[in-house]
Image (cartoon, rainbow, N blue to C red; front, side, top):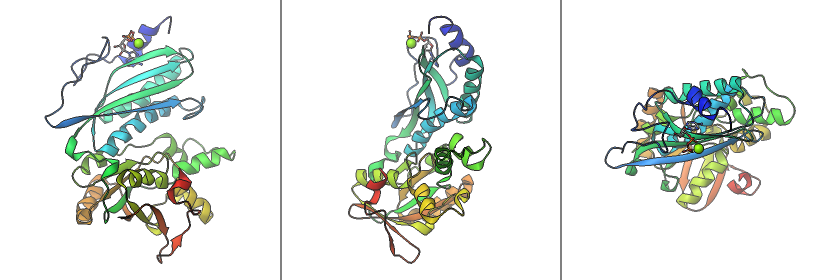
Length: 318
Ligand code: ADP
Ligand code: MG
C-alpha cells in the first residue's frame, strides 16, 4: 500500500509491546516464546474473500469477528489453547470506517481468548483477510481427525442448521435482518475453544463444523478408516428450522455449513465426563450416534429404519 501503510498499521494493528510473546508487530518477524515441554504448536490458516465468504456491504465488525472466529474454531477442534495470530489484509482503498469496525470485531474476540496479534501484511487489492493462528496443545492430547475408533460415541455441541438457513434464504432472495437469530449464527459464530480444551484426554477425534455435519463427519470417517451410524432424531436441529418441510430441514441440518460447532468421538466410558463438561460450560452436548467398523455413513430414524442419503452416504454432501 503506497501512502499510509505504516500509519495504518500503527493506528489500527499495533497495540503496544507484545504482552505474552517475545516480540510482536514492528520487526521483520514476530518471536513466539517456546511452549511448555511436550506442547506442540498448533497452526491453522483461513482466508476470507469478499464476494465468497462475506459481502461488500457486510457489517465490518462481524467480518472482523468471523475472520478470527473460524481460525479459533480450528484450534478448538484440535483441543489447542489460542495464543497468537497474524493477519494478512488486502484493501481496495483505505476506508477508515471499515477498518475501525473490522478491528473492533477482531480485537473483541481476540481479547476474550487472550490471543495476541503479532504480525501480518497489508497491501492494496481486492478485499481479503487471511489469518493464521497459533495455539498450544500437548501433542498426546491433540484431537485429531484420524483418532476415532469403533464403538466410540459421536457427539455434537450446540445446534446445527441455523447458519445454513440464513444462507438458504439469502439464495432465494429473502435476506434475513442482521439481528435475526439465523443471521446471527451465520455472522457471529462462537468458536468452541473452552469445549475443545475440556475435551483433551476425554474425546478421541474431533472436527469443527464448517462444511456441514455429514461432510465434516465424512472427514473423520475417512481419516480414521471407520463408519458411522447417525440417529437423525438425536441431531440437535436449531429451533429456527422448526416448521420447514422435512427434506429441507434435514438437508440444512446435515449438509449446511457455517455452524462452527464441534463434532467429536469419545469412548462410551467418558459419557459422564462429557455431560459434566457440557453442564459446566453451559453448552448442550448431544450424543448423535456411534462409530462402527467399515466405511460410510448411515442415517436412521427413531425406529432404527435407514433414512436414504440419496444413496451416496456422505459423498453426496461433499
Ligand atoms: P516487511 O517489509 O518485513 O514485510 P511490513 O512493512 O510489511 O514488513 O510490516 C511492518 C510490520 O508490521 C511487521 O512487523 C508486520 O508483521 C506488521 N504488520 C503489517 N501488516 C500488519 C497487519 N495487517 N496486522 C498486523 N501486523 C502487521
Ligand atoms: Mg510486508
